[in-house]
Amino acid sequence: MYRKGHYGVSLLVFAPIAFVLLAFGRADLALVTGGTMLWLAMLPDVDHRIPGVPHRGPTHSLLFATLVGAGFGAAGFALQTVAAGVVDVGAVAGGVSLAAAGFGLGALTVVAHLLGDALTPAGVNFLWPLSGRTYTLGVWTADNVVANYGLLAAGVFATGAAAYLGVAI
Image (cartoon, rainbow, N blue to C red; front, side, top):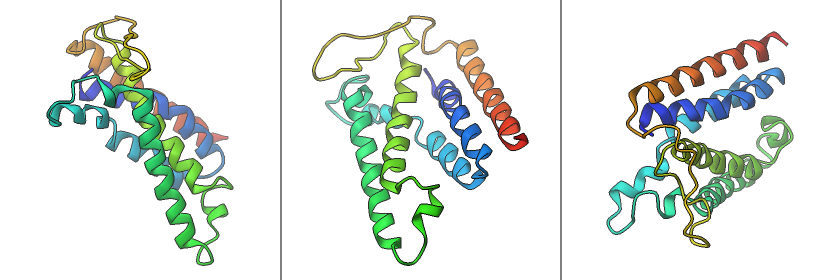
């Protein structure tokens, strides 16, 4: 997938999260979560800029999603530790630890990218380095303009609908 397609997939993955957060009155968390997922939607494609790392190799795996999640989780833990005594962190995160929320956000952002790439014939090796098998649905090529814009439109629509319904509840 290209950038617009990955944005669309990220928005499709984010839509149910937005609905839940907005239904619980947490527009602030919905905005931060959605913004982060869009900002990092292309993170696995960093392999284009790292010499010796093949495209759709290590950065396109569940291991990479776990590592990114761990990094976000560590940042959440550090933020929670620093904020202890200054802010009621439990109230800020809706009772979920910032470490758990950070892990989920980091890992889910990468998984959304992998799902987009799994739609293409080249597929993704989710289980790298344990397996060399590539998983693909082979629905369309990564450069398919209609697919990329269609996913973006579907993502925008789904997120808009989730926002509308989440606020209406």
